[in-house]
Amino acid sequence: MGILAPQADERVKDVQITEDTLSVDLMDGRMTSVPLTWFPRLLNATPDQRSQWEICGGGYGIH
Image (cartoon, rainbow, N blue to C red; front, side, top):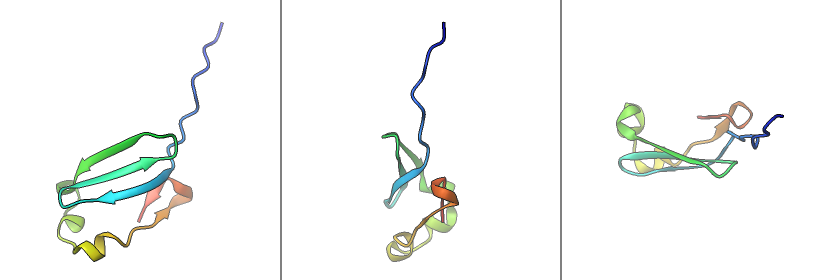
């Protein structure tokens, strides 16, 4: 007897960048956050530069 698990949809739905975190909402409802210190270029970017992100790689990446 098999157990069917819901299919995870790991594509990016939305991105929020604050002064200290990068948060990504996924299509399946999950959200993940990491410290902005993991990304020095984003940490040192202006708020305007941080707001200019786009989804790439068929929805699986952020540029």
